Structures are given as C-alpha cells and as structure tokens.
Amino acid sequence: MPRARAALALLAAALPLVGACRALFGRDTIDLDGVEVKSMGVDIRRRQKTICPRQRVQMAVFADIVKAAGKPPIQVETWEGNGSRNGKLDFADFAFRSPDGSFDGEGWFRPRSDLRATLSREIVITTAYRRQPTKFTFETRFKPDYDCISETGADGATGTSGTDGAQGSAGTPGTAGVTTYGSSTGGSGSQSHQGPGGKGGDGGRGQPGGPGGPGSAGPRITIHLAMVKTPFYERLIAARISGDVTDFLLFPPERKLAVHANGGPGGRGGNGGEGGPGGAGGSGSPPGTQGAKGAQGQGGAGGPGGHGGRVEVFFDRRFEAELLAGVAAQANGGAGGPGGSGGGASGAPGEAGQVERKPADVRGSFADISGITVLE
Image (cartoon, rainbow, N blue to C red; front, top):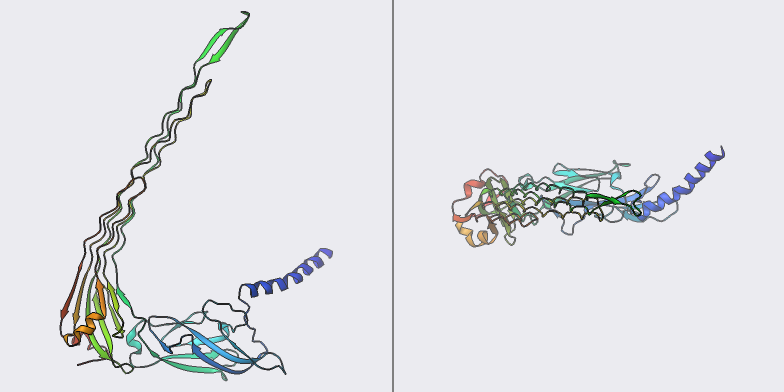
C-alpha cells in the first residue's frame, strides 16, 4: 500500500508537467465542453477570397465564447498554418464538407484538380459546429481563380545507378621469421633465436564500378491555345494539352505557363570498390610490417542524359502575341549522370528536343468543354 500511494503521488505530480509540455509545444487547444458559444463565423486563410483548384487553402473559424457565467465573452479562432495551437479552437470540433474537394485534420481544403468542375459555378463549403450543428452551420461560396496555374508537362525518368565495385582481395600474411639455434653461454645447452618476420602482401585493387544507365527521352506534348471567357472572367488563356501528358488549364494573360518536356538525367556511375586490406606482417624479431592497402577501383561512368522531348504549340493567330507570350516551353536534353567515386567520367548530356509553334484553328479543341467561350 505505501508503494501504491507513492506511485499515485508521483502520477499526480506529473500531470501538471504534461499540460505544461503540451503548452510548450503549442498543442494546448481550447476545450469547448461547457463553454457557451455566442457567435461564430467561417472564412478561408487567404487575403484574396477566391480558391484556385490546384492549390490547397486552410479554413478559418472565428467565435465569441463565454467560459464561465458572469465572464465577458472572448474572441477565439482556429490556428493558422503550422503555428502554435495554444489557446486556439481545434479543427476536430468542426465538420467540413464540399462537393468540390476534401479536408484534412488540420483544416486544409484540397480542391478537385479538374478545372472544368467549377468553370461556371462557385466552390461550395459547408461548415458545422459539431456540438450545436442546428445553430451553427454555415455555407460559404468562393469564386474559382487560376492564379496558381503556372506549369505543366513531364520530364524523362532518371537512368539507373551503376553497381558499386567489389572490394579488392586481402593481401597474404607475411612469412614467419626463421628460427635458429645456437649454444648457450658456457656450452651447457642450446638457445633459439627467431629472425625478422616477412612483410605482409599488399591488398588487391578494388573492382571497377558499373556504368550508370541512360536517362529516358522527354515526352511528346501537344498544346492548343485560345483566348476564352467564363462566367467569372472576361479574358483567360485556355490550354488543352494532349499526348504523353493530358490536361486542361486556364490562366490569366499576364501570367506565364511553363511547359517542360526535358530528357531524364543519366544515372550515377557506380563507385569503384575499396582496395583490399594489406596482409599482416609475419611473426618474428622484429615482426614483419603490414602490407599496403590496395588502390580504389575505377569509378563507373555516368549515364548519358535522355533526348529532349517534343512540344507542339498550336495557337489562335488572332491573339498570337498574347498567347505566345503566355507560354514558355522547353525540351532540353537531360544532364549526364555524375561519375562514380574513383575517377568515373560524367555522362554526356542528351540532345535537345524540339519546340514548335504553329497558328491553327483551335476552336474544335475546346468544343466539348462547357462553361467557356472562345473569343472571336
């Protein structure tokens, strides 16, 4: 019994320390049990009150609460980003749902990436306070925006790495010194004497590393560009992408879309194997010296970079200047892989691919997308 009481006393003493640790590391959120909520509001943590379909945004809940009868209300809110949670509302106290995306436990909303889903309607988010959903449920709506659309494409895969060389063979042990016998002083017997031990053999050179594999070629991408309008915006650049990459993108004319179809980098050459250890010197007087460690093996050559891909850009000639200024395409050859340690040579860079720009009637490429109108 005395030991049990001592253990309980230690546990009770530790509980305040647990709370202090939670506060120290920023995890001490507000407990809303028994708390009166006077008012509540919902928003997103973004200065511009729109949502880009390719960018997550954090929700924000604000409330005026009374912790005890007779006390004045205090203003509280959910935490922001990865900041401290001390004295903040917990996202677990709220239920979020939307037909246009999903939520995680930190209050981050990840929209559906398909831009076509919200071309002509707002993004709808419903937020409910779990303890009082009939009193505090909110539906908020946000226009889509496309400011976060900045790149598309793909690059070739990196070549495989070369295998590392095996360690060199160990040197052979030195021979033992020759023992000779002679008469002892006074001629009353014989006395032995061991000569010097032989030197140990040198270790063998490490095996060479294997060559890195070649990077794969960049993709083939076709892009159709048009100037369009939507129910929310009068002028946007639309990009219909096909080939090895498929996508549909919108972005403001003052933005620039980076398109990449580069070859993959070559693989790293394998490292040359370590030299083998020198053999131990033979026993003797004096003992033989140890053999030298073997040299490192030759490093493997890095793999060659992959050939750059091919990008074809078809644009509406009526808006040629704006459309071509809004897209920066590249199809560079991949970088050669680095050589392995031990003097391996770097791989050769891949040859550049092709980027072609051609005027065309692009209207048919957008005919199946409702919610946009190609400008004439």
